[in-house]
Amino acid sequence: MPHLVTEQVALEKPAREQLARYQGSIITNLANWIPNKPGMIVRAALYPRMLAHMGKSVKIESGADFRGSHQISLGNNVFIGRNASLNAGVFAGRIQIEDDSYILDNVNLTCQVDHGTIVLRDNVAIDRGVDMRAISGCIEIQSGTYIGPYVCMAGPGNITIGKDCLIASHTGIYANNHIFS
Image 1 (cartoon, one colour):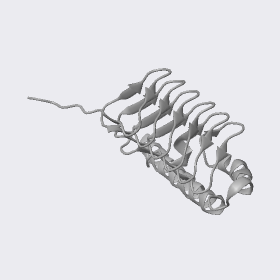
Image 2 (tube, rainbow, N blue to C red):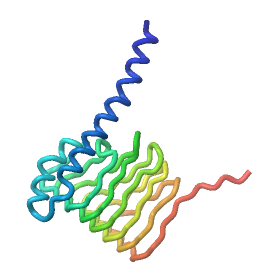
Image 3 (cartoon, helix red, strand yellow):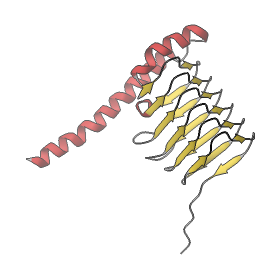
Image 4 (cartoon, rainbow, N blue to C red):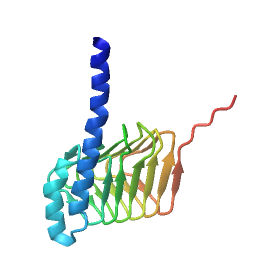
């Protein structure tokens, strides 16, 4: 009998995750295209239903794309620019953006494999065109840091950028773990 209960619980979790994905998809498709201030008002009302957490005074521009939205957390006074893409992956990825942070247009934050994590601490500024890909590792940007336009950060290892750092435009930061036998 305990074996049947375990199977039932195992089936319930994917069903909840699939329902959350559908709900996020519906909300995004309804509100994503509305431009300017009316769109920001509609998204502020609807997006808390699909995100893991959404703080106060969050502004999300039109065209912003959220995938794995039930694994994305936004703090207070966060700004997400036009055509930004936040993809927490299908299962266990996580994107956390803390208070007073902003992400400008065409930024891509992606957790590509299970357990990939991207954390932006308080007061982090991500300029346009930045591409961050956590491939099973963790990318953490600590408070007060500015990432310039078109920076690329990626890899299966961990990347941590300290407090109050400035990263120049077009910089590439890659974390790789090579095993030599």
